[in-house]
Length: 72
Image (tube, rainbow, N blue to C red; front, side, top):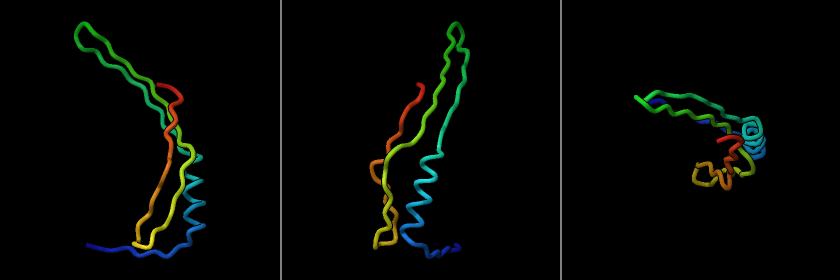
């Protein structure tokens, strides 16, 4: 198995996280027929708040990231 090692600063990781969070959206819609029944859905969401930290044990923690439903 290959390994990847990268060095980066915590401020760069925080900027990338904030950029991703601020631009992330998800939307999907669909429907299906089940004999005499029809079901449909239409969802849309985005992300807000949250923080990211680089830990001493080589892990990344994301805390308090909120999923905000725009349509459900």
